[in-house]
Length: 404
Image 1 (spheres, rainbow, N blue to C red):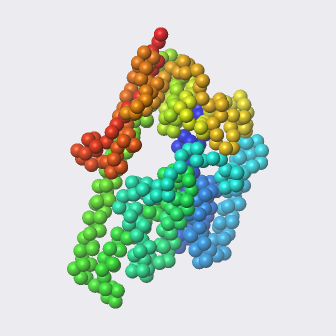
Image 2 (image 1 turned 180 degrees about the vertical axis):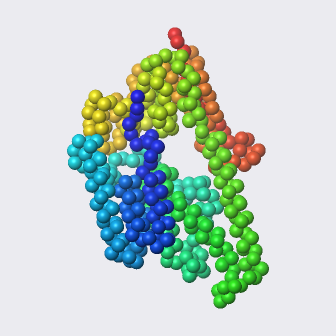
Image 3 (image 1 turned 90 degrees about the horizontal axis):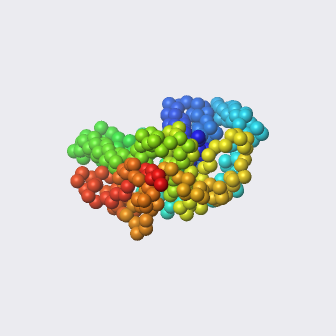
């Protein structure tokens, strides 16, 4: 039993683009411009085509510095990868097509309605960046401000490297549908920009006409650097603690499935509004025959169980559509067929299905942080003695149908 769809894939195109960005940037700093362009092409073609915007500064500057070799490296690697991608696509789709081109055409020209999966305001990525990088993110954004002071040391190479941070955030902030993973390609560059700012603290107070200036302010700025690094590490640990203890309930809940095979083989696991936190079919034991969605009001398209009898990977089943709209067959109509149920119970003025104690028995209940009812500061970062006190928690439950 397996669920198709990129929603639950462990291999994210944006994370592959992030790895390519790290390697391409390193090669660029070492003066290996041709290889940097080749790696950039790999990240775009085999990873995430939209990341081409983030790779543009490195590619353009490499062409300016070493046009012939950079151009040849980019051209050869692009043609090779596109041909390889086409052959693989033909093997699985049984027709000549380009998944890279199809992705661009679908999202740019005839795109699906991604807003069905949620929209966020223009400040989403700034808030998200601070949550994940805290003070490092603020320092990274300040890199252009200190550039006039340290341009001899960092311009133009390091400026080229970190410029995608600002280009990418600005571009992505204009898109209605936003996800944290969309920032992955620039994650390494945020660290580079922040590190450059921290390293330059003494330069901000040094006499520009005396590079050996060792005044009290310069000396103090040197001692500030480890303090700032320590603060970043502490806040990062606080963030990690909050994430693990506040939001790990979905994974932990699905782990409990292996202990409840007494429900019998051929069981049906049902998931309603928590479809977006379903980890993957790899967490589902063999005694569960199907994972089915329950209609809780979501109007977007959800993955179907993979059906090899329809033609395998080369088929285009009728229940899929190019607008991301819900298909009639994606929801289980007869709830009585559900043997197991996963749902999140929050303190809300309405009852959940699991509240029917005559029908369902809770076999696992794990605290889950209620982000809507908890203050932003306390839910984002663990603060001793206050994290548990200030935040509100619901229960992430695995329920088993009580036999009649």
